[in-house]
Length: 382
Length: 101
Image 1 (cartoon, helix red, strand yellow):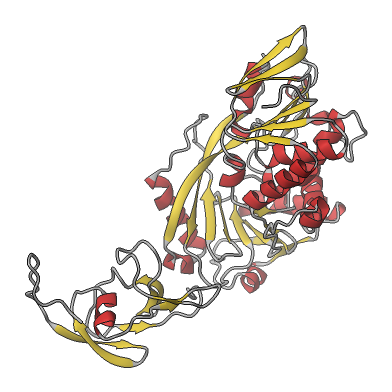
Image 2 (image 1 turned 180 degrees about the vertical axis):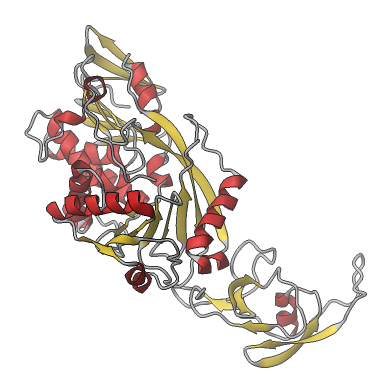
């Protein structure tokens, strides 16, 4: 294994790979990615694979908008031969009750100000988009036709290949066990395969970001939270958009392959690293889904699994340097929407690390914002 | 082709029933897997692969492999190797991945 590097990225998910590629592209020198399992083995490969621009904070809207732009021709941008299965069949966000309706309409104003082509649709119009949608008690929905789907394994693979083409070293099955630092300066990363001398670390460890932070003596307010998900058998194209309901706390989308991928969030899920599946999820998911999309009752479930959201208290990621330790950068805390903003996030992180002006201002997303009380609360998360 | 004499298993209940395969009436034994009845009637091709449209027949025969997905009584993606045969069933060859609506 390599003995020293200019930058060590911890985490071989889509954020780590995207950041590593952008670092190499901008001339960061020798860049290394360390992944304790296989690429996309954590939150990236376990996610719902959706891509949406309909967010409730300006930053998330901007990051998502730019990322969708980049994904539309990612393979050409990265000069790799990988089909990332990018499809734009829209997102339909269902609104129930006064509070949600007014929040969604507020979100639309914000989204329109940033050029995101979302719109309010009545229950009847929603049924034009998904004919079998049960619109009982629904106020309407917001719809953005340019939202969609992407294969998270393929996107990660595309970035990893592009990074390797720029001489980035990607080590899988390589676990970080410690970080050596003295007087506020990093000197090495300790792994199960030996030490790598470096002065710069990117913590892209997702659900394990807090664990990695602690290795450097830094306490990050990021915590892991299990989210369960399942996939059905493939059928002919049946439903265009991702259907999402914050009232039912669920999302469901048919992938290009024909399978349906769906999940729900549990408000009482405790913090922890448990990623076991439960029978309660299967039952709960099926019941809630069938109440709004009745014909999907006919689908056979093929597989269920779970993954860790890297949750931040305000559901907005931490992107930044650490005040306690020089050149210890964190790109984590994505709270369930890291994959869909990964293309631009990797670019911004690389710009920040190399001291270049960032394409969008991101200095306010440092970990220090929690002490300053300057939170960016994202209202639209399952 | 059916096994009539077996050193261990006995086939006592052999109620013959009629079912319909792609519009054709076929005889089978009540309770046996649909795939067994089709096989006995000489039907070896159960579906075609999605990408190259190659014929697919009985493969795992225990409900794991999705080589035998057919439309049974209007329901797509039924694994006929583990679905018991009943009188009057409609069994159809499925084109594509199955339509649920």
